[in-house]
Image (cartoon, rainbow, N blue to C red):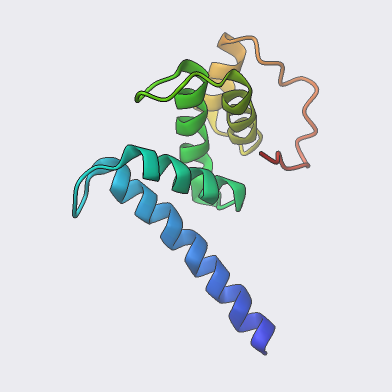
Length: 114
């Protein structure tokens, strides 16, 4: 019984983390904090939240191209884009193809760890 509660708690925490990062990114309810939002988006993506596909794509795009005053980190961006593509995010799939990121060798059943 305790394990079930603990599991539910972590699922709720993960969703809260995702939405909090969205609010920080957009400046909803307070000032924008894109750096903190990026950290939290990554945490949500690492936890495999279904709704984190878009943050995975967005973060991948940010790191890959060095947007929002972030340093370019092609490898980190590539991992996030591949992870989003594996979750069937069409924008990520299109960007991977455009940037010649090979999706042919992906085992679509495995998750990408960052």
